[in-house]
Image (cartoon, rainbow, N blue to C red; front, top):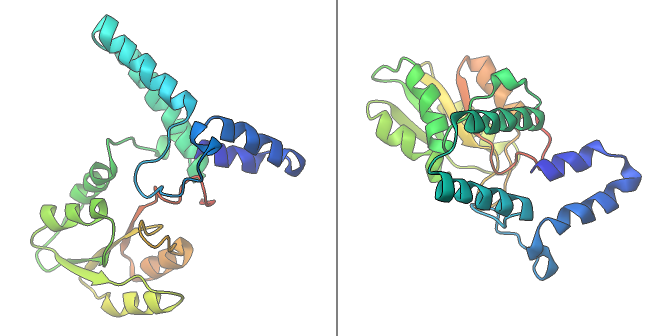
Length: 208
């Protein structure tokens, strides 16, 4: 993802050359065109090296120094801020998608009768936390459809008890992408919160 962002920052004449350099970091590109990025994906040589170095630390030293972990977390925060067009101080680091969703979810005051709108057939990490952590909150599912149909259906199921909408930016099966600017306008006009799992699009599509 960082590589894609980097290519957008360089001059057009050198894009081809830089893409070739980036491809060299992915050995799999020598014999495959890999498209299954819905979950895990091919490692870069740098990622593998970093993992091996971490394993060496655990094998020969027993544990990782707190300072080392904090430095890695801060670097991750800085890079994430670049991808999101945000400030590093606005970035929180979580273990996974579900934990990142549960933290702000639990910070809200939910009442019996409240409802949240989810995507029918959405990625499990963005569905299960709502279902199992908020049993008294109604879950309303909207099918992700083309063009304006989705947004019209979404507005129809929103009412005074709707507290949040939670979506996957890019659908993990179809690759269909939600217009976050338009969806944000809908949520803002109704004074409801918008939760977005952006992992499938981050680094590929510009976002601010």
